[in-house]
Length: 558
Image (cartoon, rainbow, N blue to C red; front, side, top):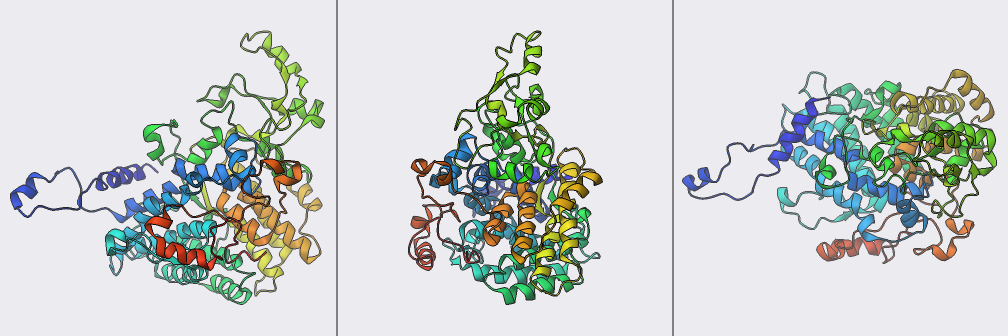
């Protein structure tokens, strides 16, 4: 994976190019730095766009601040509880993904597509870029609704400084066209895709990715347009490029183990997975990643073997702000001696709401005998489940779409009566097993044994009634998507599962500044009202005149 470091350097160098020229040849030569490149390799632009997806600290910060709280996977740290948990409208936070995708990753992708269009020697890189453009655009439209799409990032290329906001229905229609066409053009005899940190240029896997994304997007519109959803889903299944067949096909952005800080150039170093770094926190003793009660209870109440692979209990007084190795794992002690004191953070709660009861820890008392840094063995906030330390690794991959997700999509499609072979139960079971395997394959968890899986699935099968089946499929998808936050929130809104609870139900009504119900989209950046006022106002008119985060996006009908 070392080759992509070269591409990053080349792209950063290319980005220093100016766009003016001197009429005098001598002056032009004098003003030209011979060390600067004059063109950008589209493969380098692909590398940068892929790495930014999870490597951009600013962008993933919005996941922590809003999306993880809205999906109720996380709660308790100041950022998550303040913004998502208390429904606090803050444009400087809601704009992060919009600004970062449009001005960084999508800009690179659109530029590279533009320069490789109609070039018979670059068909493969062009097609891969088109597929990734669809993926990046799906993040934007699923979060905000109607967004600039067809005219996005064409300011320098075509002089379009105020792109129109395309309707989400039109955007999705184009997704299907683009994915089918781009996938069909990929060829093993074509140009090498050398900047790919997902599949290392394997075009057969990119074909499968295109079709698997078509399945995702078809299911997304299954309530608003069930006829088209079925047509597009079945078309993806019938495509000769195929869909994901095993976990080997998972679309994962590969990252590196890097030293990381929360200042200066670190915000532009995309080689490490910034989401995992953010889980550690810039002040880990006070801003740690706590597990939301919705997430914790769903696993614990079903005896899910993932529960204590994801959620652990720690004594953190000896942990430094740059290294988690000083953590003391007290999970076994708490579960054996004081399970009644376990207190996952409720929606809307900070880690101290209410202050945990606590207990005197024999383990920490023993450690205190030889460690003067331990001033007390009475543990209270340690009774709050936190994200396991093994997730705090910058080398972990960023998740795009997985084989496990396609199994759940097939299960629901079969339940819908679409033309899908196999059974709902088979797809569901395969999806759960693959979901569990991901934790050990890529995120440092102990493998879940066959006995553990079999016991779980016997007691937590797909169900009998239509409602139970849909609930179980999509709840399992929600568990899977813990490490794919955009998809977690999008699919929960689309399916309605799991059923989330408002912080108002936990006594936080007086603290909810942006409304009582859980928001269903994020608001547009306020500067759009000035810089792109005509098209911004058109988008607002289609939503009834207001940029409310309670306006449902087009496919979210419930």
